[in-house]
Image 1: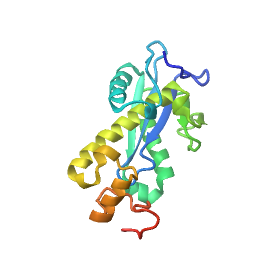
Image 2: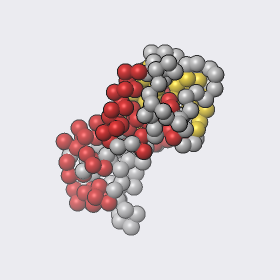
Image 3: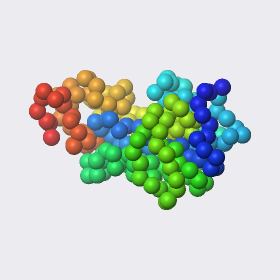
Length: 201
C-alpha cells in the first residue's frame, strides 16, 4: 500500500490539484484535479516524478477508472506569455476544478501559491505530490496528459526532441532552438537560450 496520506482534513469530498510543465520552454501548462474514492484505493500511487513513464500511464488509467471525479485543464503558450506562468498555472488548476462532476468541499494544492476557487476552502502543500494521495493522482494525470500533448507536437516539429524532453530546457533543446529558431509553440517570454547567449526572440 502507498504511504501517502489519503485525506488532509475531514471535509469530503476533497480534491487534490497539481500542474505539469511550469518550467518548460514550449507547450502548455497542464493541471489536473482529482477526487479519490476512499472505498476504492489505488495502492501504487506516488509522486509522478518518482515513477517511470510506463508506470505513470498504467496509473493514469487506474485513476480515471477509480476516482470519484477528475478534471484536466490547460493554458497554452500564448496565454502563458500574456499572463505569466504563475497565473497560467493557477488558471489551469481552476479549469481542471471546474470540470469535476462533484463539487469539492476542500481543495488541496501542490506548491505554495493559489487563488481561491468558488470560495471553496483550500490549503497549499509544499511537495504535496509526495505526501497526499489526491495530489499524487493529480500530478500523474497532469504529467501524462502533457506528455501526450508534447508527443503530438513533436510530430510537427521533431527537431526540438519534445518526445524526449517534453519541452524542458535541456541542452539539446536549447541547441535546437539556437540552430532552428523558435517554433510556434515556444514561450517567448522565457529564457529560451542559455544565459550567455543572446535571445532568439
